[in-house]
Length: 380
Image 1: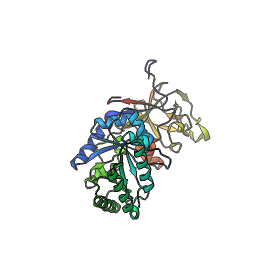
Image 2: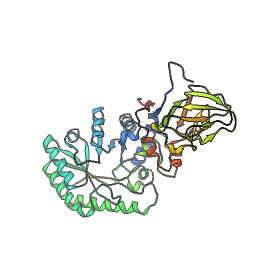
Image 3: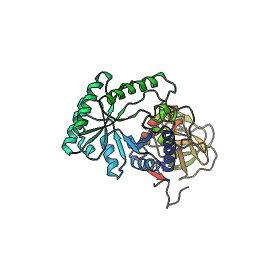
Image 4: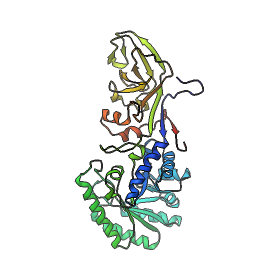
């Protein structure tokens, strides 16, 4: 139970920066065996873990790049004092590339329109833009279609010759890396190689990058010059094969009210659960507004008082109810909704499996106004 000087949170995600460092050291070591550098992906505010804190921890652990989706995310890292190389790849038609070029952000380009926009921004700020040309190798989201690639490379080579654009890389993204041995991976690598040769024939000398977390862990032949792990940085494994990754996020709350109720009493909306015996119920002030999926109603546990205990009744917007039987539970006791799993507590992966999603969605969904974020380890 917390004292008045160290109150437990109503809702808190705690980020272990030492776990982040451990994971990045592992990933960097694997990449290093292939001669590749490591880009730690910190988009979506570091997958809900905090982009600045995770970025600094990753760089301290050996990463030499950071990756984000949006220009604003890249500029926020610069504003926080991070001077490492930052790559940004997902643009809107209205993005102003001038501040990104001036800040030395590496920008992905998938079309002539994007190339012209970046080139114009470079001229306007009087600074060379650093560009990574993206080829669509089979994911069929962003990226230049192979039929349009020669024209994009020709225009990029002209801008490079002009001195307004540095073509730093040719890159793509894998569709099925989490399915080890999927035939599309070799197909995509071959298409990247074809695109890369066209860039070389145009006189460009870019690096190549393709590997995400899963390929970083399982396909050293696809590491090329740079790997881009995302989810593995946070200790979540995209593969069925075990790796020494340490989950960085824990979700905590505390008991707001513990009370005995007699047999026959039903709990919460719809009375979906009824006590078969006299029992102690603990009210925990977190719900689906705080990241607890409502679909976990009747199908989740928490760690409370040294044991896993079931949540009974429906997950509400602001609260859940935990059945503690006859064990002594008091107001203010800590509740761990998920953690690394080292002591038997629920994990992010358990939540994801139960609701039919991926752990990415759970952790990124924890960035919410009522959920406090704190750090341990590292420089946190």
